[in-house]
Length: 451
Image 1 (tube, helix red, strand yellow):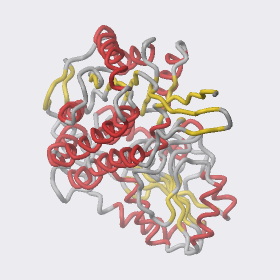
Image 2: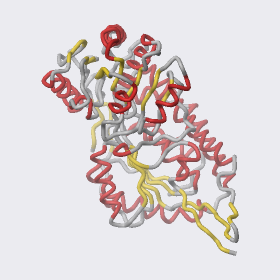
Image 3: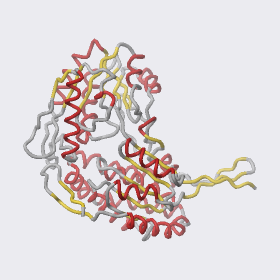
Image 4: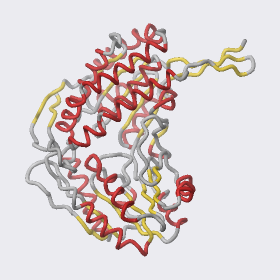
């Protein structure tokens, strides 16, 4: 059995059975058997099922939010406002794409081009946005007519059980959706290597993504990867610095700093770094580590003791490299729970480890730049390319800079997240896209029929 530990209380709050390669084979076999009938269902029927999944998530929003807070430490307010509504929006966006004619045939000369379900999908999901990432894979795959075997993170498995109940209640037939709990090295690897799995959709670390790709390559299956990030928030010299920094701190510390697309690098004009640091420290001071189940808490714990220690190790590394620690540090801010003090570094250079590697905790690095070209160079200097931001008083100037950033998403002046727009990364942040019609592309095949 796998014990589920509340990272705030350090107490066991549940258990799930650790799956085996045999369990994976059974689930994949059932999914493969159920696939033909589900693939043959009308697109309209599948769209209705997706709408019912969205309705089911909405109906159980409070339960889902409290479960995520308990098992992975996301603040309850963030869970209520983001961790549940985003998946609902993603599901409805997929249904919208179906109803807008995603599966409409195309004629090119004497060819009829049709989209068809890809087959059996293995969905391997993380713990930091458990519901969102499960929905981002499971729902478009089901909508496309695929059968799905889900392997959720063993650190946040209880949310997956709730999703399974919602999916069943929405009318998804037996075998079309299968759930196998377990660890990545056992269940995840068995899924990635299984010869009857046609598509693997994985969200997690870049290291684990490379392993998934290698295993999947043995059977030449399609692989979609949403991996790490080291996103830059580029504040131009004409921007409202105070507003940009406050929004940037909120983004960097959201979900306890455990977000792959978080703006963990704040790039500011060199002559305004001290002003930016003062604002960042004032903003960071409002993120007081506390019980995430309390409505006023902004910063909960790291998901595990090991993750806490990893983040603290990066803070130590930043000090050793010569970055200026202006807020926070390595000391434990609470007596119980895997909390990390919200931390801000100044005088960070792009060659430092804390500016290059994904920390996955509440740590913000402030990097001064000389001009726009220097800012773009710094922003593009990592192996990642998932998220990013640009702030400027001139929207067109901001857009010009956004287009120069080698990253999958860029928010201008704090624009809202869009659950129907494509989400994914460049370079070692992965390949493929999620959400809306772009997410459906990952789970369909395109066939040309010449007439």
